[in-house]
Length: 267
Image (cartoon, rainbow, N blue to C red; front, side, top):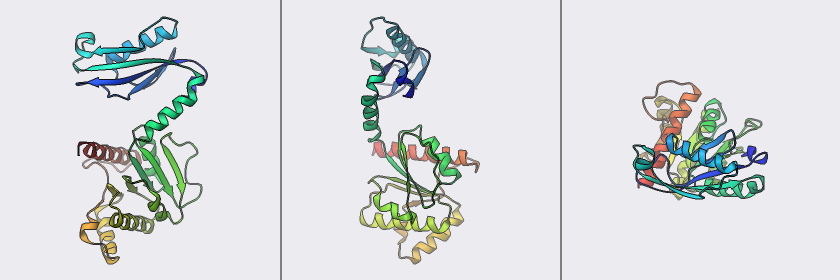
């Protein structure tokens, strides 16, 4: 929204929806005179909304709320109905909009990412465009990039496993530190928390099946039962996606988190 400090826009948001639609309630896009940010779903619906928004920017009086039937009105095969709100905004609205979107992000599922390596860095960027709140932790100084996505925060924690205690209930945990010893300590801390509170719906550990077999043995020696060890997912990522490049792994893990979020909502 930095562009809004220099020029006005019309904020187009999906207020309600019924049936099959491109995007659900809460989706939005900011329409400027010569650019857009965000999306309400694409296709003819978005094109018409952009036209109306730019007409309003040009001084024409338009509807503030518009109900659109996608089939009859636009010829889109979705067939549902959306209610769009058109709200002129300018630099004077920046504080209010920042608070509004901060409140929306507070409802997103939390993700804790332990480790600041190449895969983690790629994953933070992928998750930066998805509806998650990312808590990124590492025991080393100077490991985090200066520019983080708006939905991410970074924390130095030494030892790194100490950060487990402060995680929000419902956090999805991903463990990929620079050290197998650190990874093991974080997994153990997560399992101890599960023993007390059972509030971490996903504990994922990066690595091979042989790495997890070694970890299982060491964790069993620390007193964790087979049932407790069954709460750990390793390897992580959607199965059958080939490639070990950081960006490929990041996409596979992000897809797994989205699947988890979907199954949680259905439950």
